[in-house]
Amino acid sequence: MTVLENLMLVPSDQAGEKLWNPWFLPFRVAREEREIRDKALDILEFVDLWHLRDEYATNLSSGQKKLLELARTLMADPEMILLDEPGAGVNPTLMRKLVHNIEQLCQGKGITFFLIEHDMDLVTRLCHHIIVMSNGEKLAEGTAEAVKSDERVLDAYLGSQYR
Image (cartoon, rainbow, N blue to C red; front, side, top):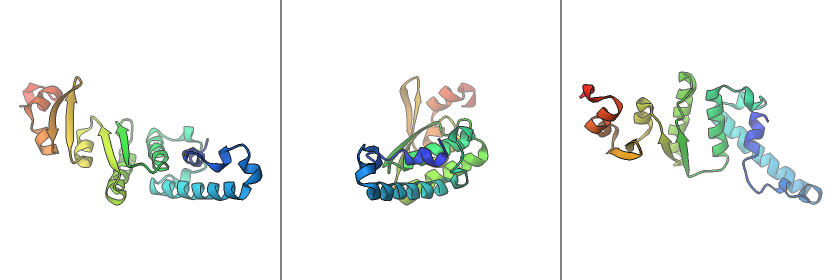
């Protein structure tokens, strides 16, 4: 499927999905499809993938695929988004775009992000409150400065020689 088609599939209970609606309510189906397409194009512009709207999603780079996943998520009008290692395998240019998008969504739309990430630069840039875990147990919790100076965190992730 194309990038645009990936987004247009997200909204649930679309009128065109019901067997008889395309036959008996074609104007309703067409109107709803236009609205979904317009929303998808707006979101693609926001994540800077508008120019790739007709490209097959399989042809995107790994960073572009992460932006596409963010766009698909936005089609569902979420209040909270969970990101599991968004920085993994993403080049620095696309990572800056993703970080910028996350910041805009937090500040502009009030969307809460729950981030699981090992890249501490990314974590400290995006997160106001940090919980550090090791082996399934909470080691530390607080601001970036508090967490970075916690001896348990230093031991677990950098080794005791960094004290």
